[in-house]
Image (cartoon, rainbow, N blue to C red; front, side, top):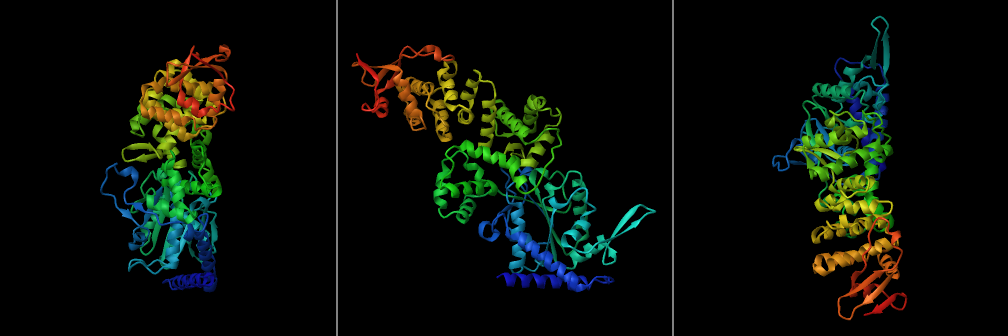
Length: 591
């Protein structure tokens, strides 16, 4: 197979070289055989690059789909957008810009298109392209940048000469004795080229506008060459005139299954495990899905605590993904690094979740929230849109939609709101969060440094606990169970769980009863209850068939911030399910 591919590349290179040396009115002063060798070396390097993503492209990637109208230009209920396939891109001569969020598969798509170009027969009569030329824009250094034509020549490996005009203080560049700019146009026009510019968002901001303009101008001069550019959605801040704009669609359920099948032997087990986890929604992006698949493949299961996944994914989006690819994105704002962005996003998410009560928010909503927090982060008061665009460009956590903005994944918005709550001073205002939306509060318990104390603080504080009812207690505890906090054995935790039984069991609401009962299954909850009962007098009343009473005996000064009831009731069935009378020595009396 290797030999066949190499021979194919040689044929493509020879055809390209032959056509170059038949260009009318040009007699290059370089050896045609040397040009052929240059093209063979270059095409071989492009082919090798296209194999890795970072694994095997053919074996581990799937075909993605594209919206014909980008997210920011279409409404929620837009019916005019069409789905475009990879092969549809070859069916016309239009230049394309492919947009997508970080980790959505932009570069992998280019690699797949290159392999279609080399491996497969033309799609139809419009598919005339045989020579892939790839310009990885991240490799262009701003201090070395001359122009896009010079960059194309350098990446192919063509011999460049230069002459300095000392009088005009200009430098002129040549290939084979002819002007470099026009020669590059002639070469790519006469070699049936498909010209890929990968990573427009990865260019230094110092030369980004120049490269935008030069790619646009180059496209005007080409008749027989197709151009495909990739860019993060958030960084596409000006139109490339004449380009059709596509945007990678989120992965469908079938695509998620197809990717999982390529990575692991038991995709159904993986998907079933994932279905009931709160971070299921992040699987619509290949980068995030493959990270979950890696974790699953390594351990045979998904992380027990979703908070570990949230932290890994957010760190990946904020920093690690670019670091792995050797990209440094410099913020326009002083000291607005990834750590400060995490704090800013947490504060923004909190304000949007609890002040605006929204996942999707308008520019006005964004501006109001931004005004409330910008001074804390030393950000300009009038630049809400610009800050949002930088965050979208750098990490894709906040994205632009046709109607405004939104967090890319709701589970990430919830985690960020929780990250703000847990870092804020503990106060009675938390009761408002419980009433309006308890899920981030449950996550805050899980990610706190002492989940047992945090949970006990909510339940044993009468002023906060009084705001729990059958509806929000079920929602809160169900989410808490899904978050699987690392509870330690703690008497306050045990007492808090007993208090929940005391408050809600008598109301005979089956949903509340079940969700409180299931809390005992969480790590160390059962032992916390037992430890609490070791410090209580347990009273069985003959007149009460359903409940027993617990009278706390420990020093009440240990509970500095919480009041203890004189007596508190626990359902007998719960007591009997927890206590093994042969193992636990308790103080029990009967009245």
